[in-house]
Image (tube, rainbow, N blue to C red; front, side):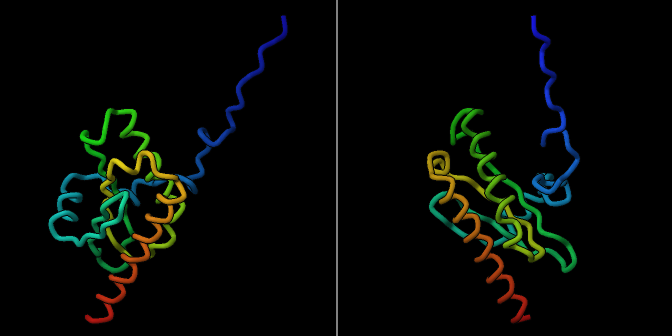
Length: 140
């Protein structure tokens, strides 16, 4: 009998590098933060998602949260939507350098959309947020 090969434990799941992950400081975690963005923030609509955003004080970084309701499907579908959104935000995060809280509310069509379209919509949403906030700050 041949010896079993040991699993390679040095892969990306066991490394401490957070380059491709979301540290807690860049995520919206508390229910109160989500509610504040919904009630006081502005909205941007796109075919696959609705993006809510609220400016933060200068010097604070941007934070992103996701909402995927039960109406969008079972746990498997909802988790897939969240994984797709997290990856799209991870790739486009540098597009939004403004201090802002962002909540992305997914629509059912995001589940079957091509990932390149999801990526483009997230990038476009961050561009719109950046433009709106820079225009708001210029008027102040």
